[in-house]
Image (cartoon, rainbow, N blue to C red; front, top):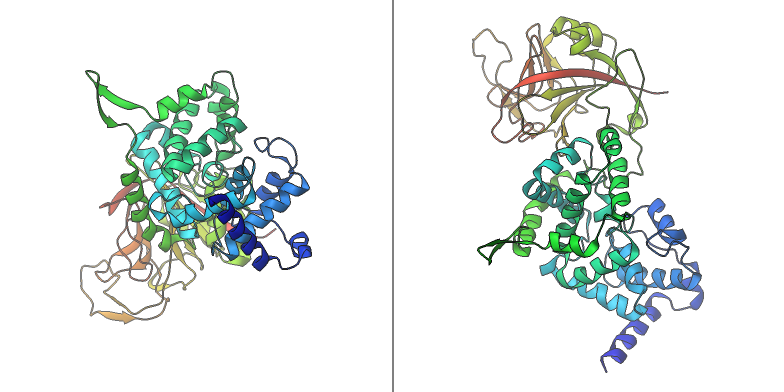
Length: 484
């Protein structure tokens, strides 16, 4: 009876979506945010999906299920869905696959699928948080090379391990996932990252400076004779024991992970326009000069910058015009190096942090000595590492005090434009102003110490870290965006 109900329901869905059989032939496979390149890889022969192209009948089944998910279930963005649908269709008919996906969407308590851009970003941050909590040493390495970003986590949170593991192992994970939900993805994914990093060969570890190389190392390990899947699962689901008495699980419970996802959704909502979720957009290029760029050399960071910059600058290259290591720590030299350049990106290394931290500011106008203020609403503050985040200017009335450093208080001034975002003198440079006269980001005269505080225009919160307002600066660099 249940089988007939499922099949009858599926027939009704198909008739509403494809009244004519030719409609199915004209329909395309939807990507749900997975990206065209990944969809083509899935259709034309991912190793885990059989290593050969999906036959025409299989593509048609996949197309129908995905269209039903969009038009009947209202799903618009869900990068995991194409691969999960393909896996389901490999061992069940279309009606069952559709019913399973529908149940996953209905069962919010297990967070089976991230069905919006905000939820996807919340999942990405949750994965990063869990890595730092459970495997902090591995997390530091992954953070440094851009793996713990929405783009960097694509093999797990978009492709459901398909590009990393053998097909039989992906199907085992699929069995666990259908019963456990997203908790299985986080538990198995974080454990796989830690275990794989521990087994990376010395040559790979030495040259592992980006997410692509890291995941290639994971894939090689997972396909090697040293990888025993059953042992790996035991490690992923291990519990601590004291005198043969089971105590707490090593990995957080599903309820904790579900709360963590929910708590990360406001952050995701605020950053959905700042963080790239796929790599279709190219990273900013680099101009090779006498002095190499250090703080923005990683492609993941340059991809974030490309997303944040104005459209006309998103296909440009970065050219280094100032480096504190090469030109010296002098505000006078900084002005001299920037004297002929607009659209500059200044980055700085924050010292004495638990993890590598790089913050910065984008200036639309040329930096020069002008304590009266200049700049416009195109300026922004940003954090490049960890967890890239952009703080754009939002026009609103700001009540500010004097910018002078002579100790005399000037009468409060009301500003309702962006003409005083950049403030600089012979003793400091800064961007963003606050009600107490502080700056969103400020550097002293020898560029060795910085400070940050909440800026009304930018709304930057915890630019460096929670409770940190004053910090020591390591390397400082300024690049200009140039068009070929």
